[in-house]
Length: 328
Image (cartoon, rainbow, N blue to C red):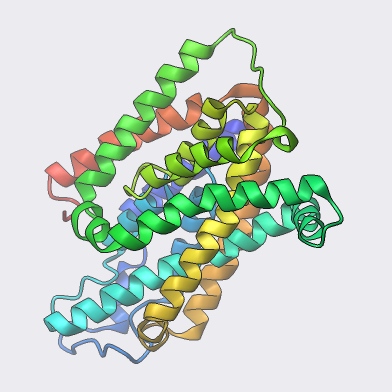
């Protein structure tokens, strides 16, 4: 997919969300004179599920933050923001929405497993003692995963309480965009030397894993900081991107299982199975498109386009927040 096409697609997605096309459908499904029944699979329309799936798939592996985009989409479409609910019902629906947006990551995970099946097969061969390079990659994935697993379990409650808001996301988008542009133009003209993925050590993987913890701040982007961590540890850009994708399979997979077990009941009672299937399907399709484009694009052009996109999005959303068009 050409660069301009994907940039226009992301921009169109942002516009699509801001005009809130599913608002009428939601109102029709939940008339204002009738309180919404929580726990009966009525809290999300199919078009909302499709939008969230597309948002998840397009942004999960691009360095623009899927969590930030999903939080924005939820706010604009009014998902999990019904004022008629009691405090207990509102919390149940919030838990259900959070679990839903995490569980539809499964579609993006399947996309990576399919596109990088050779590496996945190599890792299984390594676990069976048949491929030393595959075993090394498994060790590196574990080393990269452990920091986020430990810190996530310890701080998850506080992160959701303090950072899952509109302004922290906007700040992360803006700062991340500026840093991308700074390092892009600082490196312009320099040779992109580095090690291949097969030469990566567990210490290098640990650096990437520590960087991944920064992405617990929504809006930062797990993809961005893990690619940056790979570059800082000495990998080539191509190897950094590949390791970021593979590490994401384990990290996102663990998060999906954890939230699915913890809040799966709330999710399945609040949203219909069809909504979950729709989100997974669209996440898978859009992730395949985004990953195929990103791998080819970064090898030729670098990350500047994502820096511009993040800064522009932060300015637009910040303006909408200040003018009251989007509720904080």
